[in-house]
Image (cartoon, rainbow, N blue to C red; front, side, top):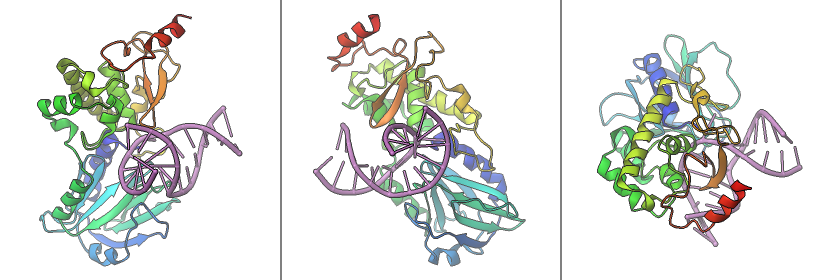
Length: 295
DNA sequence: TCGGCCCTGGGG
DNA sequence: CCCCAGGGCCGA
């Protein structure tokens, strides 16, 4: 679940709790993660000091010394991952995979029931960067070049939903914020990127930034498992315009929110505010749809 | 570009 | 029991 706003919240929460702390020891479980923690890494992190923590897309980078040639931990929360710093005395929950015992009685824990996430050790910053290159991580949404975004969207024959979920176009947007950004920009998630006008592409870019920024101020969204770095839940789920609101009234026009599957993901939108009847080239079904509505 | 798959758990 | 879920990778 964790998308950019949730990951950013985790990083901001953890920063005052772990930066400057020394890792005394490592405990790890036997359950296999997407990429398992390797026992040989224990000795490499024991005794090191956490000097910085930052976010890139949906990834968290923990710097074990500021120098570029110093090791890093790379964390991805997958669907249900939690990365928290809590009092070491706090009872250990189930599905806990890696725990770093810190000084001052704290413990940095990685928990993930579904195990789609991972926590790995990398020898230096270059190794982290090459990893990002391998997965084709695109630019950060808050630093998008307007021309780049227009071009990336308008050259694509894919749906807006598919484009927004593509981490290579933008790093950090997931299912919730893709739907919310389409809602704010009043664009149907089924629209093809190539059908957008320049103005619409700009509107979408502005909506993405606005939605992500607002979600961060609410500490992200908690549907079920998500918690920030200190264990607090998010609050943006109470601000959703369309996500998970199928059948409920649109906040702008009261039409019932609809839901379809796009790119294999549930996609929510207001049929009135985000109508398909614009420039979507291939909507042969459109007339049928209208008939249905009139009925 | 899609579906299937990796997993667990919650809800109907 | 079935279906669904914030993500991403792999092969048809």
